[in-house]
Length: 451
Ligand SMILES: *Cc1c(COP(=O)(O)O)cnc(C)c1O
Image (cartoon, rainbow, N blue to C red; front, side, top):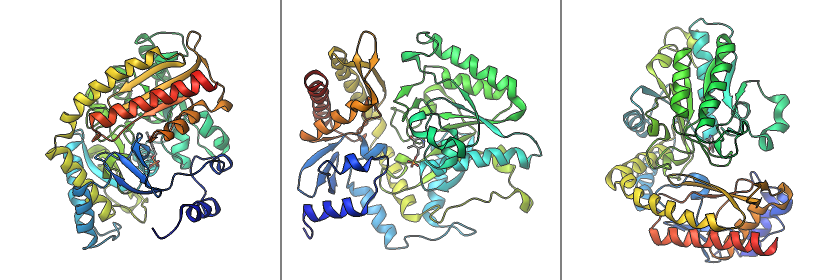
């Protein structure tokens, strides 16, 4: 290896500002410097192997260093790495758009590319806003969004979000929306239990829409799970109910499938669990199998058609790397793997195994709610299981657990006091068992010994 661990560490500390990271704390630890990946494993410059327990922040699908995606990207690389989509087009972008339209809900017929989940949502909100302008409808300036939602970190996406810890500081910069309650049945703000709470949340949502109908651009929410909000699984029927409300009041429904898309919940799309068809759908994270930054916002003919005609109707939005050919080639290869290797079919027994093993966590003294939808899991750590008293933020119990897990070869990342398990769909049962064993051990070590 060309550079020593110590040199790389020094330069990392000297030159990099890491995302979502308090650098003072980061620098107090020995960083893990990744050099390679192989299947479910990340391998660092010291040659240590770690299970990638959160799919490199929810993006990896078929494992690292996948031969088929590698081949597709390098084949494309030998042709061209990038050309613009502004007014001209490229082969992989065309083929991928056609494929995406085929595999997403059948009302979605047009693909607008961008390069990450936040931009996919920026596109969604700007399209929805301009849709009404182009149709000559005035006064529509607000979205209905959900408390506890997360749609990315650019200002438009933050405006749609509702997580105080991340979003409160930017409040003066954000545009205002109507905030409906999070369908959080586990510790319901209305003190109602599942599934009554979900219906109640829908009633509140409908009341908001009814009272402000003429101002509202669209109803916008994450699909199936409020992921960054702590893996809050929406109660069954909630999304369907939101679709019905949108229909009743003639509003588009925007679903953010950035986290749940590409098989994470056990189906290709989260909205398929309830047969819901959004008018606008944002996808990103898993789109390239976790290889390259790429995103897409899909819309219906009805929406697209409102932008076709004279120049005043043009959607003046686009990013330099929109429709990047390398990313699109990786995405095509990833979707091909889904189809050829029957990934979703093979995933089902792994989901069942995961569900079974999660029951063991119910016995742990400091585990509260255990939330799962498919291959997305949140295990909530609580100070007191009876009263559900939370750990104070300053104790950073979630981080203590993930640092502990590193000692036994597992990399995960928490959401506050919620431990996330979100492995690549390709993980083997043995690797899954090891991942769960280590997380269980780490939770016990931290919550039953050191605190
Ligand atoms: C991660 C995420 C985003 C933002 O995606 P980035 O690629 O990080 O910008 C948006 N929506 C949801 C639901 C996400 O989980």
